[in-house]
Picture (cartoon, rainbow over the protein chains, first blue to last red):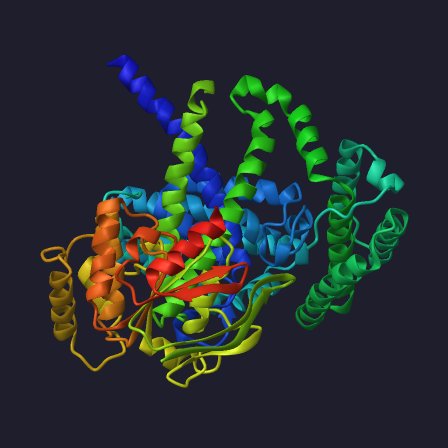
Length: 189
Length: 199
Length: 224
């Protein structure tokens, strides 16, 4: 019994490593692949910042967070993984760096909601994605406020991105709902 | 691309750890300084760094163009919402902090960053952290990026063939399915090569 | 009818097709060739997934590079990995997805999908999770999803790569029985005996164009 359990746990470690690196890569590829048209609009939207939310609702909190942390760490050491091939420490020390750090919380929160409710219908997924986005803003806006020395200015600047981000929350929930039905029993939740 | 730019300047040859600490001091220092003239001085220092590093002109142009764009936007908004002084301070801080961070990345090979981190974080091994695996993780992730790019291309073609080139679902769902399958395959491949035995 | 008129293509500096001029009135046409021979690229010019850098392809007089959408309504395309093209959770929904732009009601779409699935031996699988079908069943599903819109032509790019021998044969027999024109890209040579015409590509050039037997003899000599 004990040996069986430990071999099970061991098999888990390679699978966990694989999931982490593959989803770090997944978030990177979302940045390389621009030109997705959301809801029949004509402006292509880069979906990269939907990556942490997608990872969260698909993988659950632990693995999604690991993937996002790895993605950000590799970006920071200089691999060109951010959209537009950006790399290095600069994106993190820039004014919107907080929104990058916020991805970690984003994945954690979105994943935790899905795991907690153990249900993967559209309402739960919407809630997960929306709270995940909120978590990102909860880190990003204060960071920007510190940068600007002014909270009001930070809020105003962040509001510009809100409509696009809300559209992404809807898209993430929709995608995840279809995916959870397509692979029943395979995903987090 | 804003990654490493090959070169032989003193900045390229300086030890990674020293460069990193220098970058941190400058990037955080500008937030301590509150006089725009001082921060402007730091900007000039960073600019001198670019001259010393002799980075390709095309690279400098790209970096300064995107930096100027953000700085201008920030300047305008701050001026409008707060004051002209605040606008100067914030945009000069941005130029200094992002400029010096870019300088670090442009003059430091990823391999050198990886080995510095592996060395510096070695004591963390006692707490179960495995900094020696950063290089492995970087390699595996880049491999995953190229495989997934290929898959993304195929999925996109298939969506187009189904007349669904503008549907997010028709791209994202098959892409995620194949991403998950790739993760399964990679997990098995790693297990087969003894990855689990090392844990 | 499908025509190629002085068609050539390069990906950057890499030249993959040159001077392909063909008319394909036959019902069962196959392209064979080694990896990198240009056969997959040629197939993609038929429905506008690739726009050739020289010359052009024509489908019933329409240029896929210009009228992509119109051409893709006439030309279905099956890829080697069905996972790429299965969009919806269940087999029935996925076939019905192809009909989303028609005026049919949801019920009618589901009925049409179920009917077609049954015809291809997938009866009872309409509500089955599409991704949990076997490899052979998934490829048949991909085929159904293309056929339900009743295209005139079906292009298949190495559709049997992921299938075992039995499923390979079954799949190709299904193709042979279709009323549609079929253009098959493959390197499974033993599946082609009942095809009308086999075209051999090598390094982007047509090197043989004949009935299956002599064309395949030529190809086997080519690869040694």
